[in-house]
Image (cartoon, rainbow, N blue to C red; front, side):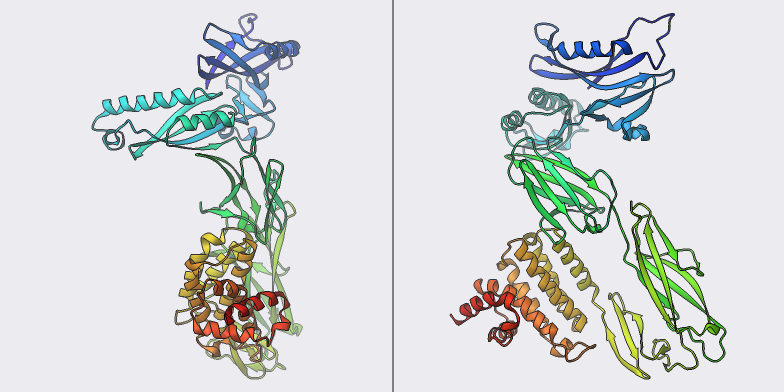
Length: 630
């Protein structure tokens, strides 16, 4: 693309006309056809406002223009118009055009419809249908030795070969309409593989691009700009809301593939899930999000494959997040016995570290302190002075986090209930790290090491048995990954193998055998089964060994299956059998049920003792029993 000032009206008294009411600047894109090559120029045309309609009519009707036997002006397109002032001009892009990247980087105010530029600055508006092509082409007639390795040793020979390849590529790509530039990014082995980028300042017919790709033997092309992608304009969107991402190709290109790239630059395929659905309307493919969570923040990409050409489009979705809050008081049970007048109580609300702009509000009467970063978390603290003369039994304290980027100022609150000990209270005195606790209430402690959850201990005049909800860190992370898969982020056919490998490893470590760990493992089985049904995926030999071993490992120590909060509760066993049964039919069909413990558990299940209570799985139970009898 070239910039030039092609025409200015005569000057009066040695100066340009400067009245903002009398002068309009038109920026035009002239498309030249030189034999089979295409070239584009941007020109600035300064006219009196009174002639605007006549000039635009003449421009519209003036193409094609025959400049010579081999040079034609095939198009004249208005790209921007401006009103001129003494030192500045107020410009806007014409419909179908947007400000160039350079303009946007230089002028923050240009993100709207109008833009204030310096008087001598070129208003560069480019077609919103411009296309970029990332290409990779094998050049079998060239040697990689100099191009790939000996650039500095033989600069003249390198430059000669470089120019030959450049000319060969430009010869092909310059036949496309709106061709602007071609840049070679590098060379690699495979005869010589040339990586390059082509810029087109307008659309290209797909059949013409397909023919070009065929003429460039052993080429792979990736286009951006041919697919129209739409995403909610009013961003950020709020947690829990709905959003549609749509992609529309210029013609039917077959099945679309969707991807999400998160803040860590990890790209994952996305599909149907509890928060996502896919639909199609004519040429438009729709990725519909409902009850949206923060997991969907990132860049959405739709991709269509046409032979050796991949067509892509991407846009970013910004979400105003809300944090997970963990709130505690210290002491947990302020002690107002023995004539104590007041007790200083520190309330701590901890959230994961985030770049979100949260404001925190405490209940009235609290003095807050400076926040502190603690590893991956941020701690906010406030102090409440408990006045023992008030004889309060319970004080309720809340911390509320509001995301100031949220349009509705969405917030999340966590409440801490502080139960106060007085002279009439029955207590369990502190012991082995547990604080002095008021009777009929639970004391809590963080889990040991890196486990997630809490340990609790109830006081009923005397200490009761400790109850742990602690889950091993690796199992907790695995459960989170499976929940992401359940939302629709990831494909089970790609992720199942590594998930069951990790689950098998997690169920064999020394600290696994606890109710919380076993319960988490069984939840993972259940969620994976739901995902497989939703994505129409059948378990195959690549996952069977680890799946069955994991199912067997959770049966190793039956005493760990007892719910410490309710020893008579058998729900965990029932859930295990339901989840394994859900997978069981496919397991048996693949002849992979080699673990005796799992087989016996299923056989007991299939005898019908609880079949009537689980009608949803009755048909699969009958089918599986039939297979086992054979």
